[in-house]
Length: 256
Image 1 (cartoon, rainbow, N blue to C red):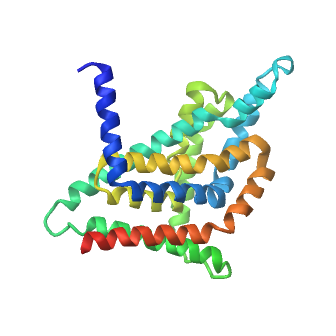
Image 2 (image 1 turned 180 degrees about the vertical axis):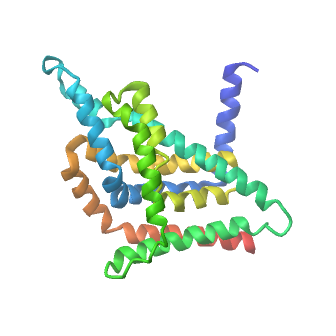
């Protein structure tokens, strides 16, 4: 089979997945859009700004143009790297969940994962509306997250010097492993599919959803990021409630 035939077969398979699991993919895309504005700008924004500064500092003033500024601020290799890591995590988690769910007595795993993700998004919406609610203690989870984040950031630090091309892509691949609560919820949704391809496409959709807010940060700094974040934060609870409803309905359909 030649390369064109393989590409055509792959695209056909992706089309089947999109038609079959469109609701799950849309839920992850919108979760990325909302999470990107209300969460990722604060967590990943500094990484983006550091790359933008490093990239533009290497361009001579005589060669600086609006196109150079825009392409430098977009840091597209970084976003492609993040999407690669997220897709691999989605494929792996969905494959494991699919095999485990096929075991006797564990067929409810997909239902449990969807229900867990629905509760996560519901809690996210309520927490944004009722901001005065106390945060639930993490029982050491935050400490472990910080430890892991420090390790990943330390390994990726040499790539910040010239984050272009493969270095920018590698930086995105590495920093894609930094843990966060929104990522956990997205992985639970992807894993519930039980299909490696659906899990990969779902997490790629989630990564795509996070790009607009980070592009805003890269193009105009934190001021644009905060403006975009404030505008979307007003509708974020409603979007997350819809997501929770869709995932809950999908879980119910698996039971019924």
